Image: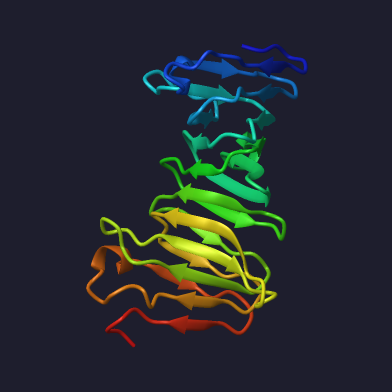
Length: 232
């Protein structure tokens, strides 16, 4: 546990068979502006908590930290453990995760996490014009909001009943830039201010698991929609 002042934590751990299984603890920064730097370990997975009891949750769990930095050379995972989670992605594999709402909310800046995992509560993922992320594991309660630029939303063919979704910046059609490679589990999507394309043509009308309760809000702009095969 940290104290009332600014604390800096540097974690170093020898991996077991190259995996960060040795990191199994709860670190609580408490008050102050607290930061932590994490080691270069294969498949590092970090849980961020609002501070509730996390007994029984495996891995490295962090609470009351204002800054988390992982090693940019590794594939790193950041998980929201509890409460409402708002993910504001404003850089390459970087952004701010806010847990809770109102006066009890706590915000943490994260850097070099290319895989984000939603918690059990309601989550929201947003992107600034400079934000990008590799993969997101969402749940059915979450909402994904696109950038303010023209965006193409592509649902891929289903894998085990799920239809992976990718987002691509189409503001310069000759040089499209994907800013979200894959998100799974999402059911509520909202376009930004640009002209968005919502492409479900890789799906079939029989893909009931992927299509049921799918909520698409085009947002602003002049938007287009490509229906699943067998639907119009």
